[in-house]
Amino acid sequence: MEYKQIIQAYFSPCGTTQKAVCSVAQTWEGIPKKELELTPFAVADQSYTFTAEEILVVGVPAFGGRVPKTAVQRLQNLHGNQTPAVAVVTFGNRAFDDTLIELQDILQKQGFVVVAGIGAVTEHSIMHCFGKDRPTAEDCKELCAFGAEIKAHMAKGIQPAKNIPGNRPYMVYHSAGLVPMTDDGCQHCGICADHCPVGAIPKEQPNTTQKEICISCMGCIAICPEKARNVPAPVLDMLMERLGPACSTRKENTLFF
Image 1: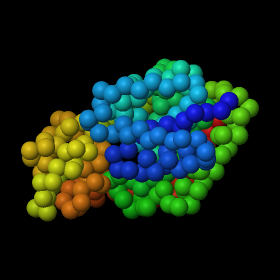
Image 2 (image 1 turned 90 degrees about the vertical axis):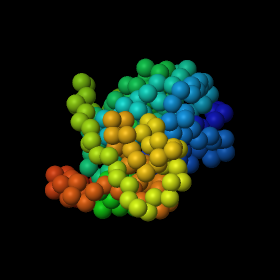
Image 3 (image 1 turned 180 degrees about the horizontal axis):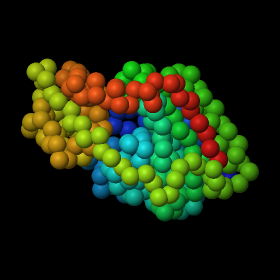
Image 4 (image 1 turned 45 degrees about the vertical axis):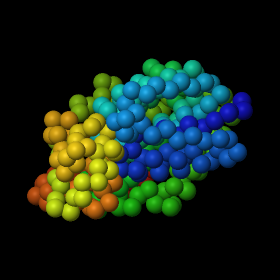
């Protein structure tokens, strides 16, 4: 089949999932590509419909081994019609646990045929020393090569992937519960408020965060031009002690059919 468009969709608070998704989609040369940003609160209620003549490459980060609840809500606004989809899960050099199989299940309920799944290593959103600067140029090259393998696989027929790893029922999600703090460097520009996926940062007071709404995505830290948002050092030390051993060994990108 000749495809009319490649949709690159992503819930990517820190930008690394976007990079991974676009690297995978790069292999489809000569076909128009469209990026679909699912992160901002402003797009929470927007609905999208796709045909069988399009390909969806869609990515989310793993939060505690699961698809973030906010991303689930965004994904439920995507409607396929036997549309082939590539599911991409990014993770901060620990593991993606049940995130990939959960993403497959969500997409299939929405009318997509998940032909392949990818686990892509990115820099940890909180402990930046783990997976630092990933995906690197070499990672992006490998993810593009994965895209080429998927393209060749699809040429033989559109079939659901049978070897996506994970468990049903999914593991219980435990929120990180981390709310970024703001220091005196905040210039009240409001960029973080516009970027926040859940509207937890008031536009009129962008140096504050509503704890009961925050999902600990760390997108506000990543996007702040003044580097005025951060996680307190004692909290980072606690996380390093608890999760450091699981994150310290280099993990690899993986492809599943």
